[in-house]
Length: 553
Image (cartoon, rainbow, N blue to C red; front, side):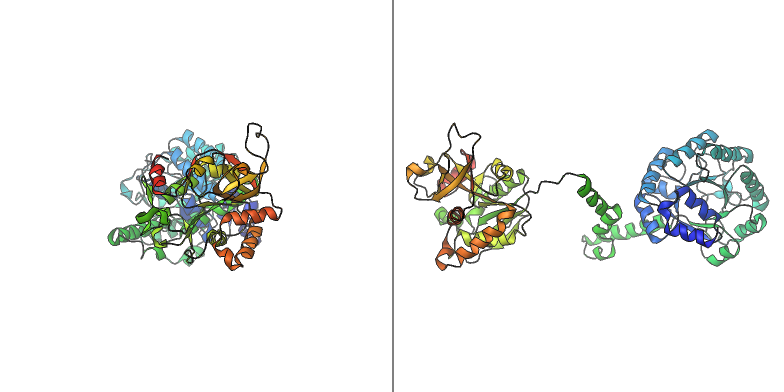
């Protein structure tokens, strides 16, 4: 093959069938190289290194299963591995097919199954099934009768559907100690049976047998070699002798074993990852080799747009002096209720509703808030400021404007349906209101009462209510419910809310203000703040009695 054709092979692998790529390598007028791989990941690494083809090593594939190279891995198990290797790469694979896994009939079925998996070629060796590795007692290994093995080759060629599929005949005469004459006799028979190339094998540490065969064989068909034992021979010698292809047969597996042994030993001995982390591939490199980026792009193209879950901002800066000694060394949010602190129950409810991104605004005894998987922002002026300052800091820490934000307090327990309703309500500004407001009034508890555009009633279903006013001192006749402390701010309204917070807090006397002042300002500016009515299923912890009741909640 001329150099122009080989340049095309390098640049246009995706446009040339794998079988044709491999046949071009065999017939190239240059010395070509392929390298061993034993699974999809190693195959991808071999291709990325620049190799034009892959050797599906029988030794390496069986070893990665943890079994011997004696046909202990079934041929269907080998096919499964090859399918992953083929899918992961665009270069051709030459399978080390051992003896063909049986007689001529098995070889025919093997060839058909390899073509179905886009495997370009198979190498068959003239030993008996089950085979033994050539480097373990080679001279004691019997060879197959010449006519029988030639029949396997002929059967394989008859079974192939693509004319470019190649069968490489591996001659083991030198391995078995039978000499050059027997090697030539066998090579002639296999060539006559239709073999596309001859792989001549040797266990010597020098290439003398290989070179003697090549001189005698001349150029009757391509010659493939595996210099595992005579690895110190300069490659230019193979090039000068007209060898067609060199197989680096097991070095990827061997290097992986060395690396795994060293790393596992060090981790075991040091009980630490500090010294190994810089010497091994990153997790991101694994993701890259797996094609994670391509999957992300495909998801964008083929999957419906995923519903973005909101962020949660929990305001937990205050001490909670009403709880007395319980909050001497911790904020109210960390007071224990049952098996977890109040904040732990809040986080669990958010998580149960699918909300994982939670920012907690800390203040009093902030070091005591140490729950995992949370983001923290601190209001160190908690003693002299109010909810609006904490809200401003929380919204700033919650990131950009791509997600809705649900705001709640660090002393309010709730069922998971509360954030679910807020998330599912389409309006950009939403508050939750409890219709059972008289309980708070009867207990003389400080509460923020809501007057909406519509009160809750039997006739309310199918209609919408919007906030008109919220205050702690609403006349009883105007109260439609108690604000539960939950506010959803849609992503499109976040810039407006941040702007209004900045305006409010620019006035010194507003730095102690509460969120209802912001809600009233939104209404004054003409914004529609949706009121969602519910009854019960939340608990505002304002007293020691509430702490006791929280256990039952």
